[in-house]
Image (cartoon, rainbow, N blue to C red; front, side, top):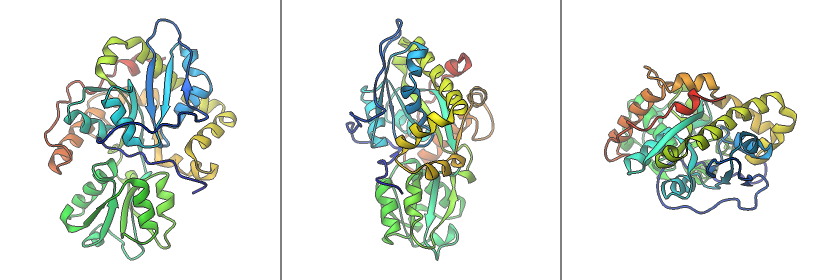
Amino acid sequence: MKHSIPAPRRRVVALALISALGAGLLTGCQKPASDSANVRLGYSAWPGWFPWAVTEAKGLFDEAGIAVKLQWFDGYLDSINALNAGQLDCNSQTLNDTISSIAGGADLQVVLQNDYSTGNDQIIAAKEINSIADLKGKKVAAEEGTVDHYLLLKVLKDGGLKASDITFVPLETGAAAAAFAAGKVDGAGVYAPFTTQALKRPGSKALTTSRDHPGAISDLLVCRREFVEKNPESIQKVVNSWFTTLKTIKDDPTSTLPILVQRSGVSEAEFKAYDAGTTIQTLGQNQANFKPGSTMISLPYAAEQISAFLTEVGLAKTKPDLSNLLNSTFVDHAK
């Protein structure tokens, strides 16, 4: 990787907040506008969330008439805890971790799907390991309870192995990538940009990626339900701003790409390599994905499947109530 890698998108609930780039180039507040409530919105290191930096830098929140305090978190985990503690109104996080939060008592709603992972989450293994079955008896690192731990458990089960068939090494994502690259473990479950670091180990390869499990890892804008109910106008304007941002990136790559690259902390070439591994969802896809379906692309279906799996493997103690989880109102009325 080029320079230092941003701290991980640690996708799980636990511990507590703090750690933000307070004086970062792209963080700050927009001026208050209209009678909309100010929105405190968190995001962290994941390709599908970097567009929020463009929203802010291009003044698109102002354009939509909404005051947003966009807060960058070095640690994804910290952003989740900030939302659960009421220190954020909305946060960029996965469906898996949102369900885990709800299982822990949080009252949250999904109002937007940014993307789903199509290759940027990977189970990476050493040269001599050529299949999931070959992981038996090996040391595999991942951040415990996170979405990549979820992916690891899922592929083990699909491959006929139990969690107890491997020696699980719980490390935060950056440390897991570093440990694997240094030869201290035989495999690692990590996500971009940490995949690049892990794959520097000679002969290493991805045994499987989120491309093989479409829809299994969905990245979202999630808000506290109380805030959504009290401030629907504000949420609508934030969602509108997201789709304006996607159009701006498409129409003006020359000025927006440098913003995305700088926020990512990697080289332009590396950033572009992540594109195929993150499938940004259009407005039309959002509207379709919030509807019931029979594949993991459908958010209601995916939520039920993930909830059952998290309960089965012990990442959630009880199956949570998902009746208020998905709120399609804002994508249905987005401009």
